[in-house]
Amino acid sequence: MFREIDVIELRAALDKGATLIDVREFAEYAAGRVPGARLIPLGSLATRATEIDRDKPVFLMCRTGRRSSEAQRILGELGFAHTVNVQGGFGAWQAAGFEVTRDPKAPWALERQVRFVAGLLVLTGVLLSVLVWQPFIWMAGFIGGGLVFAAVTDTCTMGLLLSKMPWNAVGPPSCKT
Image 1 (cartoon, one colour):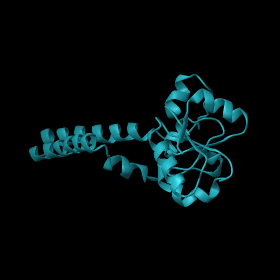
Image 2 (image 1 turned 30 degrees about the horizontal axis):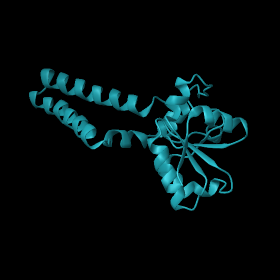
Image 3 (image 1 turned 90 degrees about the vertical axis):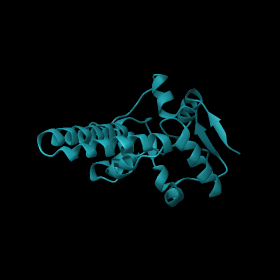
Image 4 (image 1 turned 90 degrees about the horizontal axis):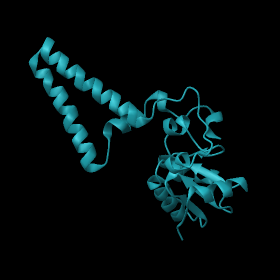
């Protein structure tokens, strides 16, 4: 059975020692998280499920609640009977004004990295087309088409590639608490 709670209920559960798994990517986690949350990104949840105690309720959180509901499904298929999705995710936690832990040298959020790289590539393509060779304008068009495709399909190849970069890799063990 899939259960959901709000952040007020989560806070009460954490005060009683509940386990909270954050399924976002490292950059998001490092930029801000619920104190005491453990990072296990959604993409590695199935392979790292042995790190989670099956006998206790497991609270799952992401940015909005979408990825954590997917994590709840994955853990359910692996035999976890007591998983709880946090409605509204980390965004709701912040909106409620609850305490947040941040890493001082956290990388930019992945979405911000994508906006920066896409903007830089478009600007470069336009400048190269004006200053060097006019067909470079197609570089800007290609990036624009990629952004439209990303929006229509709700996927982001550039984000996927950026998430594999060394600065977005899971940090030292102290970041996994």
